[in-house]
Amino acid sequence: MTKIDAIIKVMEDNGGTANWQIIYDNICKYYPSAKDSEEWQAGLRGVLYREIRTSQKPRIKKIGLSIFALTDYKEEGIPEKKDAIRMHSFIEGICLELGNFNKYLTYTADPSAVYRDNIRLSNVATMQDMPTFSYNEIVCETKRIDVVWFNNKGLLFPKKVFEVVDSIGTLNGAFNRSLQLNNFLTEFYIVAPEKHREKYLQTIDLEVYQSQKERFNFINYEEIIDLYETTARKNQIENKIFGV
Image (tube, rainbow, N blue to C red):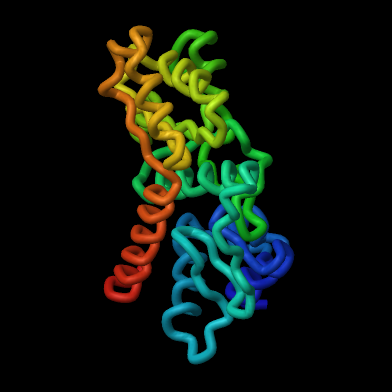
C-alpha cells in the first residue's frame, strides 16, 4: 500500500474526511513505517498535496483551511442559526483553525464537541492540556474559556481568547472569565450573533468593566465566518502558486 492509499484509508475510516492530526495519529495502521523518517510529517503533506495538484483524477480535495475530504464527499454547510449548540461548536472550530493557521498554539474548553465534517474540536486544537502559566485559580478559570490562543515560542501565555456567546445569559460569564487574564497582555474577543451587539455595548459600559473596555472586541458570526472563508480561499490560491 502506498502512502496516499494509506491516507485515503484513514479518511475512509473517519467517514470520508480528516485533518492533519487525524492523519498523523492513524497513518501507521496502514503504513507502519510512515514515521521512520525524521521529516515524516512533511513527507505525508507532500504526498497528499501532490495528489490534489498533479493527479489527473485526484481522489482528495481540500475543504476549508485544514480539512481534507474524498472527492465524492459532500461537505456540511454552515449550521442553521437556530441550532445554537451546533453553531457554538462550529464557531469554536473556526477560531481554532484560524489560530493554528496564524501559528498560535490553540486550546478549547470543549474538546469533545463536533466541529464539522466528522472532525471534533479535539482534532483541531493543538494543545490538549492548559499550561500552568499562572496561579492555579487563574489557570482553572482560563480552562473554561471557549478558545485560547497561546504564543508558540518561549514561555506560554494566552495571547487571544474567544468566548462564543450564543445566549445573552452567558455574556457576563464570558466577560468575567476573560478578565481573569487582566494582568496579561491578552486580547479579549466576544463572538456572537449580531443581535447581541447592543447588549454587549451596554454591558461593556458598566463601571465594573470600564478599566478594561479597550481590550474587548465584538465579532459577529458572519464576520468570523467571512474571515475564515476568505483566509481559506487565499490559502488555496497560494498553495497552487507556491506549492506546499
